[in-house]
Image (cartoon, rainbow, N blue to C red; front, side, top):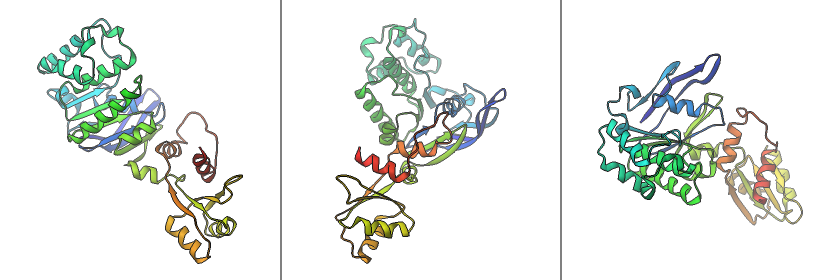
Length: 317
């Protein structure tokens, strides 16, 4: 597992990471999210010993990375898809890593096959596409068959089949009981992959919770109601403090309600004898929940919509 304890990193007068703490658990995919410049890559570099913390500590299975006797056997990481020397072949790049950590040379062929690079294993890394470089980086992370794995933006440059392959790989590694820690800007993919999320903004942790809990916290979770008496139900819902948006044009019987549960809305309609033809929970997406969480941490603004208006717009789309 990974333990980050009050970790801080400063570069001169700039604070990249400020007193953050979190942990990951074996058997789960932990997603690491945050806007550009939030401190994700810096944090991952400190976990694997590439950057020295200004304060605090980062541990892998209870030890700093520098104290791991055979680090590639305990933690594997993809932090830079272009980390290999461009003049070396993929095979010799991995072979050098294997020899430095006492890993059998036969493992090189195994990981090249896992990532689908067997046929180009003897080609120079400098000729690789971004997607091929990503797969080589994943092969390097898997080389020592470690229990802890870190991946920084592993799907960059991959086609849809490659993205799906990475998702299935992450899930399979976690299913084997390994700790998988992965950052990505693709929210739809993270929603399909992660069990738990750590979200940071401006170098601080702003969420550390199971993915369903993060999504449930969004104000864009809404209830869709269809009724032939929308005006009556809307009036009663507003009196209870809910936010209600009524459909226009071809959907005047539709209400999008934020701030009420299915049970509360159904009971209210029953008490006022309002017939209901549909009562459906509409969950926010991870992207919507993430945008709300990080709204104060991005370096640029976003179009402003009320929660109910955005939820209604999302349903129309």
